[in-house]
Length: 165
Image 1 (spheres, one colour):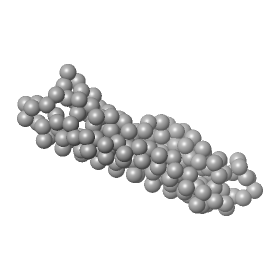
Image 2 (image 1 turned 90 degrees about the horizontal axis):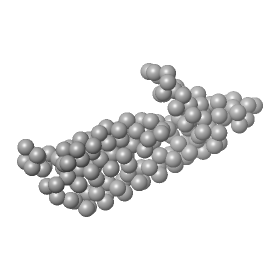
Image 3 (image 1 turned 180 degrees about the vertical axis):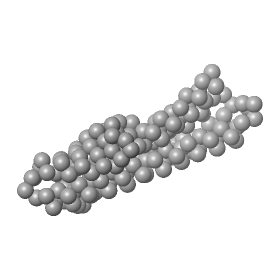
Image 4 (image 1 turned 180 degrees about the horizontal axis):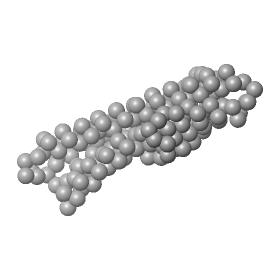
């Protein structure tokens, strides 16, 4: 049973890292569940402080995932159309590798802003840039946190490796 939990926890860590790059999956919370599963393994002493701190980090990052792109869009004078366009563009861009992942959110935000107000192309471009920069910042933060959680997983496992071998 402990090997199943270990493998499932490691799998969730990988899904969390991938999810930090995809809009449909909440990367850090999925990675946190991987850490939680590790602590269900027999022989691994539960560290409630570590679980609590990483849970708080996962929740805060989950909230910031919605706030950062919106703030980037607002800062550059954009609307909700730009935010929606960024997310839709990201999903569509995933089907056009290798650069669709980067170009899709920007084009989506630009199109969204042009739908909102087609008479102001310069403002739409500026808002799309802000939305895109917010998206990149949020994705970068989620990716780093998911990698950090993977590091925590590996360290906790490594400290308890004598139990496994």
